[in-house]
Image 1 (cartoon, rainbow, N blue to C red):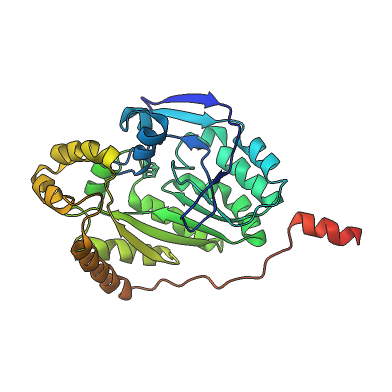
Image 2: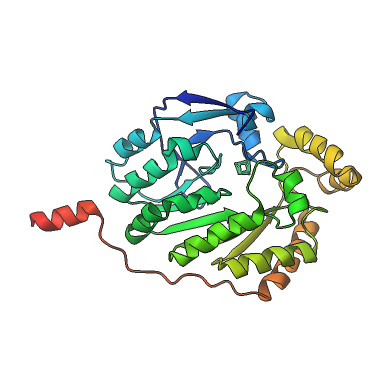
Length: 298
Ligand code: SF4
């Protein structure tokens, strides 16, 4: 992406142990993300753990972890319990992945030593890897989550300025579903006053269902302390009339308050009931390569 700097770095570790999440391991082939979503929670990590700014340091100065697949392959020699999430702090299919193929090479390592895996992305580039994703899916539980918080393109251009249009993401999701993969939509974060109307949520749910999404999940915006000023500056620039409403909604902290959350839950439940989202049935897994080798030796 023009205007971004890419720095090649070597990492010592690939898998990060995670606590308090629905997965035990995370993996991020890049650090920073040119998709530049205004609300991105990973901006806060950039400030908290790296002492970098939450703006251009995050979305214009990208660390490319060039040896991550080799390190992962080495780490996977030791059996791991639990599941892995790829893309928790960056998009693993942001455009630079087209050149470096780091996410693809990590998936190839996982095919050799399978772990239950989920991938979170806004990048249609993922369809390039349908072959390796299908291989992994035969050996382990695999779910791909497409982040599509809103399908109203005038909103998306302002909130997610570096991403592919939402409909293009959903066309990619449809390709994954045609290939038999489990692909769901995360309608997250829902932005108060911007993408939280019943009409907007209905358009998102309908488009997700039409693309064949296996689930449609939502979560309201959380504003971490580190990104509060950044997000409010974005609001003042793009949606100035909403500033007082956000000040009131988020007066108590990072979350919009229980009343708002409850009302949003009901709204999403109403629109979700109008459309079909069918979970993919669980499938028998192929034994992994190590198990096959052991069988052959016996
Ligand atoms: S695509 Fe994900 S990681 Fe990248 S900026 Fe947007 S929310 Fe953050």
